Length: 447
Ligand code: GDP
Ligand code: GDP
Image (cartoon, rainbow, N blue to C red):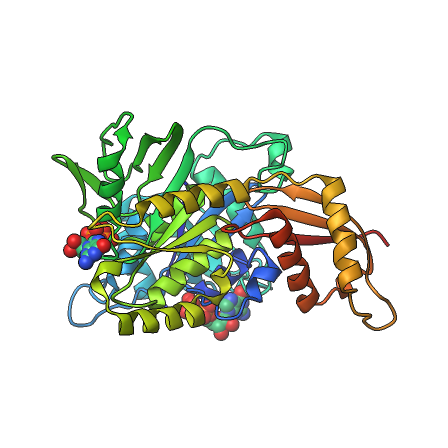
């Protein structure tokens, strides 16, 4: 599972500045999708092939009326509890405050791997203030400047060390996170069902598992262990990754834990295909759009399943159609299936869409076919001249799969505008029938 780093500290020390530095959006094309809302508090940090989920816990505000952490939002406490590593941020310029000491005491008691990060350290090399922070009993103090970027990248190296993650093999460390075409993922197809509380995740999973043969199932020892449920269907092997804190109760699985954003993100990262489960009676909510945004950013294949279809009338259906169109525009590449998990309706077509999305995400595209398609696209519509130069696209090859990456080589490619990129994307999509998977285009200029 992807390790989780929580940023903790009193307000104004620079948590959100650091968060933004660590979680630069991976893909400029993705950021251009209209209607994509991103939750600022959860993001992905990348270091070579390694990924981290970073949570900005907002602020630990002292509460005068009671214990200092009473005012902490439930999700914040949960995030700290679920984190593998805490980055405790303090303000080197302001010095150690009573609040800092309170938080330090809390973290010492918690006993999680913690790094004490002294921010705003630019130009303060031999600051006497630093000594104050050593007194907090959290070991080494790491000066950084989140605003200027000093020491920020090193933090991820320190995180790897503190979490005792094994070294990655040299070859892997420099490679991109995507699978290469020669490196087709084998083994079971991993599926995550992501959705808000009450969308019907447990009901759907039980409907699936009631029909299919459970291969084996081991109860995890502790609640922090991730559950994956292996099963077989029509001769293909699958693995269901739990997002909902499922526990087996008698014959069925029941969700016993509170909704966890972190579990959802970890499951998305681990999956090949994500089923985004919506509740038809609620329409597309803010939370749904956020989850959709994360799925998109992760690059996973996705199927949108609209559950509780049995419970809405034709007027609600119309409204739902409209909210899907306006709020999930950036997921137009995904198939939509209407289902009733409760009545076990629509499950066959949902399976077909899951399989198709997986196949699309792992499609092999040869250089000769890609290059021919590229030439045809240019003939159909040439890219516009921008400034002095017209972009000249020469050939294309597949740079990875899951998600598929098409690398286009040529000259002056930095001048290819977004409209043209979208045109190319839909051109390739149509040719390779890439329904259900994001597609990434990369441009390599050789002049
Ligand atoms: P948060 O409340 O902990 O999330 O803090 P913010 O990230 O909002 O930062 C609070 C203030 O500190 C803002 O005005 C930032 O511009 C400033 N700040 C953040 N990082 C640095 C830094 O490295 N150096 C300096 N001098 N100021 C910083
Ligand atoms: P989870 O929190 O996402 O795991 O949601 P649950 O599976 O616990 O379902 C929440 C509620 O929605 C329960 O009362 C279910 O019986 C109900 N529910 C689930 N699927 C359907 C459906 O297809 N139709 C209707 N009408 N209700 C459903």
